[in-house]
Structure formats: structure tokens, C-alpha cells
Figure 1 (cartoon, one colour):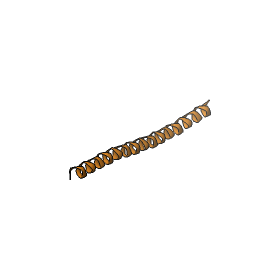
Figure 2 (cartoon, helix red, strand yellow):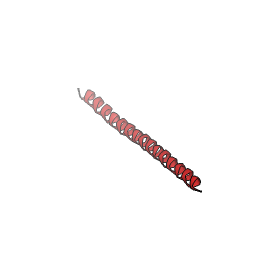
Figure 3 (cartoon, one colour):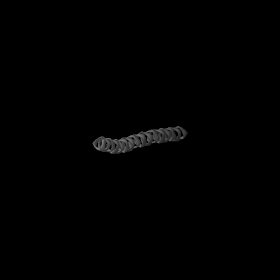
Figure 4 (cartoon, helix red, strand yellow):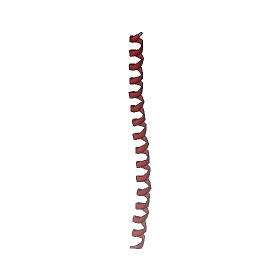
Length: 57
């Protein structure tokens, strides 16, 4: 019975570490996507401003 408890505890610890790793990786990807999306919006606004400036000249 004790060995079963040890195995279960060991597996729980292992899954906790994996869960933390998965959450960490997922959060990194979410931040990368958000930054990329934000950069696309900024570049779109920048090109729009350039077009407006050249149209005014």
C-alpha cells in the first residue's frame, strides 16, 4: 500500500511540473502572438499616416 502511495505521489509531482511547464510555454506563445498582432496594428497605422502625409504634399 505504501509503495502505491509513493508512486501516486511521484506521478502527481511529475504532472505538476509538466503542468507548470505547459502553462509557461502557452503563456509565452500568447505573449508572442499579442506582440506580433500589436506590431501589425502599429505598422498598419504607420503606413496609413505615411500615405496621408504623401497625399497632403
